[in-house]
Structures are given as structure tokens and as C-alpha cells.
Image (cartoon, rainbow over all chains, first blue to last red; front, top):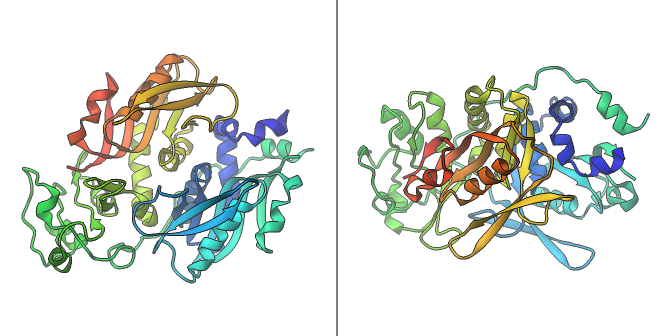
Length: 157
Length: 272
């Protein structure tokens, strides 16, 4: 029961104390790590990323599906089970040498997180860690992160 | 004990800190200095003439009040209209004497001809790069809504997801995402609304909001008011009371405010 509940993070968001605790756990982990960028993956990464950014003094950078970001963007394509998708980031939002955290609500196959990391590394940023509320470990997403550390609060089998 | 139970038992330090350092003005690094001629952007009756030598931040300070800040970039003007992003030229509303409003307004980037020719897109992503402006934005909303018995912050996908949760966390409310169709798992209720051509639908989880709850609806911007109107109707259908809609930006010429029925609207910045 609890596992199914937490795969849908919207129920977490309905409990103000649990939501606050979730954010606080991430903030405690990252506040002293000189992270200047929190990159959140559309759309549920937009829920967890900004509170972490605000509390740690980092800027928030949204990583979006194609054609959502106005102005100049860079794109990273990634493979889905059937077909491809694409993640975009604004040119100039992140500078070379910045230390970045990538945030999403959940890691499944790791395809989206991998694309996110690639975007940041292409502009010369250093991805310190990927952070998710939930991991589905049976899908082995961790292995797609090229050795980049992954921090999750909850595993769901 | 499962990790979920551990999560449930965890008690973190009581205060969610909203620290941060001052961000640099984005004019130097994020956007090229190209600008649309001021005359192409329309004029307000309260406009003040600004020397073309001033940059955006200098203009904001020298104009005295925060009534109108127009930026003219002499190089960009020579290139003509539609040649690139412009610095925001915004009129502050709400408490015009609050010094935080000017910083928020000037951190918003205006992109001409997105998503279609003729549209000036108000891009809040530059605000999010400015740690002080982002923090001030949230603080202004939190100061207005804390202590008012609001138990729900409803954020409209997707940019409402950026501003809603920090406000919800600070005022102790739950956060309810209002989403495009087929994104929310499980039982949902849906509300249709009009677009310029055709209709779209907004969905909310059944049971997320209860009758009698006091709700704040958040989005980054109000244009025609179609999306916010749909959110208000959805929440009304479950018997909740929407106390206010709050946006960072309003486009007043599109009269979105009139589509909200009796629900008041609060915005930080009005872009004429």
C-alpha cells in the first residue's frame, strides 16, 4: 500500500509535514556543497527543485520538453522504450564550472536524468549528484548515470 | 522498518530556510543586449522618458518610482525590432513602494515573437536565475497569504509548479497540481476551457481538496484568464473556496481579470 502511494508523489504533497520533511532532507544534504544550480526536470522536478534551490541559495534551471523554453536553447535527445524524446535547457543559464544538482521526483530507467546530466556537462558544469524522491531499482536507472552519484529517499519495488 | 516508514517518522529542523545570496544582474551575461525599439512596445500614459544611455538597472534606480522602467539599448535599436530578447519593461502594481518589486520586474526577460509572431513572451526563467529576485517573489506572496487559514495552494502546470510549492511549504498548506489531461494517475475531475482556437482540459485529483477548504491558485502569468478560470471552476465543483488567484505577471490588456468571476487577483508585475 505504502509503495503504491509513494509512486504517486502527489499524495506526499497533500501532507504538508511530509513534503517539508522531504525538502528538508535534500537541503540538509546539499546546503554545504557549494551548489550554484538546481536543475529540475519538467514537470514534477519543478515541484521539488525550487524549494531546494531557494533554501540552498542556488539558482533554479528548468529542463523542459521541446518548444516550451523561449529563446535560445540546447537540446539533448534520449531513447525511450519506443522512440525518442528530447530535453532542452536555456543557453546561458548555466556557466562552465558551476556545481549542479539534478532533481526529479522519480528515477525509473534513468533516460531523462542521463539527458539532463548531459545537457549540464555540455556547458561545462559539474553535476555533483542526481536527487530523486523515489527510485524504482528494478529498472536499473542508476546504471545509466555513468557513475554519477544518485541519492534517493525511497525505493519502490 | 521500511524506508517509507522511516520517511514518515523523520522530523527535520523546524524552519525551512530561505537563504541565498544576491544574484548578478542578468543583463551582462544571460541575454545578448539586442533590444526592440521602445516605440514598438507600446506606451503607457504614465511612461517616463528615459535617457538612451541608461542600462536596465540604472534606469530602475533613476526613475524614482517604480512606475515604469523602459530600456533602450542604442546598439539594439539600430538593428530594429524583433532582433532579440529585450530587458523587461514593467509597471509595478500592488505595493509600488516595496523595493523588491523593481528587482523582480527587471529580472523578467521579454522574448518577442514567441511562441508566435507578434507575441511578447514574458519569460520568468531569468527571474529563477536571480536568487534574490526569486526569494523576494516567494516572500511577497508568503507575506500576503500566511496566517489566513489557506490550506491548499493549487498550482497550474507547469510554471505554477515552480512558484506554488515554496509558498505552500512556507504557509503550511498542501500543494495540489492542476494538470493537462492524462498526466495525473488515478481518478480525476476535469474542466474544459477555451483557447483561441479550440479547447483544452485541466485535471485535478479527486479527493485532493475537500469541501470548505480555502485555496490559493498560483500561476506564473495571467493572460486571457482561461486557465485560471478553469482552475477556479474545478475547485468550486468540489466545494472549496478560492480566496485569491496569484500570479507574478499580468497582461492587463487581455482582461484576464474579468474571467475570474468574483475571485480576486493579485499580481506583482503588470506588463502593458
